[in-house]
Length: 435
Ligand SMILES: NC(=O)c1ccc[n+]([C@@H]2O[C@H](COP(=O)([O-])OP(=O)(O)OC[C@H]3O[C@@H](n4cnc5c(N)ncnc54)[C@H](O)[C@@H]3O)[C@@H](O)[C@H]2O)c1
Image 1 (cartoon, protein in one colour):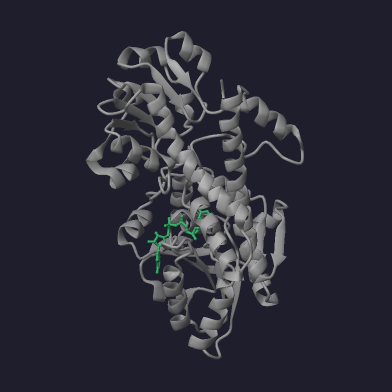
Image 2: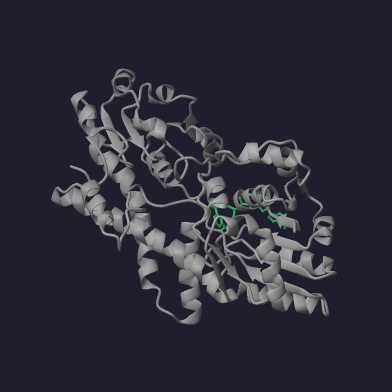
C-alpha cells in the first residue's frame, strides 16, 4: 500500500529520498525551510547536480505523487511516515550539531496526532534516536509513534543509482507496526533482493559511523602508502591493484589522492571520535586518520612549490574543485585547503570545474577566477594542478595545454593523466605514489 510521506530537508539526501520514494509509488511531500529550493523543485529544476535526478524529479512531479513545500505543519499533519533528512554539521569541538534535528523533532511533536513512524535518515550520533523517543513522549504525551533509524549510504555523484540499488538497507526498528510500514515503503527494493538489516536503534546508528570511518581509514591508508611509494620508488597503482586482488581487501577505496573531503567523512570521523571520548572508549585509529588526512591536504601545496619553486607571483591552474567527480559539492573539498595555501604563498589561482565552480566561487569570491573551459583556465599558467578526478580531465589535450601554458609543471593529485605522454611533451610531471 502506498504511504503518505513527509521528507523534512531536501538537500542531497532529502531530495534523492523524496524523488526515489515517490517513484516507488508513495505520496511524498518534501519540506524545506529554504523557499528558493522549494520553488525551484516545484518548477522541476534539481537544486543539486546528480546524474538522472532532474528526470526523476520531473516525472514524479507530473504524476502528482511528489510536491515540495515550506509548510512543515501541514506536511507533518498529513503524513503517516516522516523522514528526517536535515543537516547534522560539526560543532567546533567535532561533535555533531543537532540543532536542525531538534527543531524538526519539536515540530513533529507539535503536529503528532494519529500513529506516525518517524525515520531518521540524517547521520546522528549513537543515542540520538533514543533521545527523539524520549522527547516525543515528553512533548506529545499519550500519542502513538515509532522512531526508526534508517541511515543513508548514498554516494554523491551516484546518489540516484544508490537509492534504487543500495548494497543494503539498515533499519533500526523496534516496533512491529513500524516494520510493516517500512516493508510497504521499500517494497520495490525487497523485490530486487536488496538485503535488509533489522536491528536496534543504537546498532543502526553505529553501523553508519563505523562504515564511514572505515572508508576514510582505507583512503588515508592508501594515501600514506602512496607517499611511501614515492619515497622508495614503488608504483602505488600496482601496489593497490595487487592488494585489491585479495578478496579480503577488495579494490574499492584504494585510490590515492589529495585527501578525503565532502560533507560526510570529515564530519563523521570527528563525530565518532567525539562519541568515543564521551563514552571513554579509545578511538585512536580514527583520530590518527583525521590528523593524517589534514597532512595529506597540506602536502599538495608544499609539493607543488617544490616542483615549481616559490609560488609567489606564479599562476596556478587548478582543474577540479568538487571533493570528488560527478558532484557539484565542495563541502570540505581538499581544493579549499589547497587554494588557501596557494593564495597565502602569493600565487594567482585560475580554476575550472564542470559543475562545482559556482559553489566554490561562493566561498572564495574574486580571490579565485573560475573559467568555463579548461584551456581558458590553463592559459598563461606556470603549473597545472589536478585536484578532482573528472573523466574529462583524463583525456586532456596535453599538447594544447603545453602551448597555452607558460610553464611546464603538472602535479596530478589523482593520477588521471598519462605520465609518459606528459613527459614526452616536455612537462615536468608528478603524480601521487608514482615514480
Ligand atoms: N550528502 C551525502 O552524501 C550524505 C550521505 C549520507 C548521509 N548524509 C547525512 O544526511 C544528512 C543530510 O545531509 P545533506 O548532505 O542532504 O544536507 P544538506 O545540507 O544538503 O541538506 C539539508 C537540508 O535541510 C534543510 N533544513 C534545515 N533545517 C530544516 C528544517 N527545520 N525544516 C526543513 N528543512 C530544513 C536545509 O535547508 C537543507 O536544504 C546529514 O546528516 C548527512 O550527514 C549525507
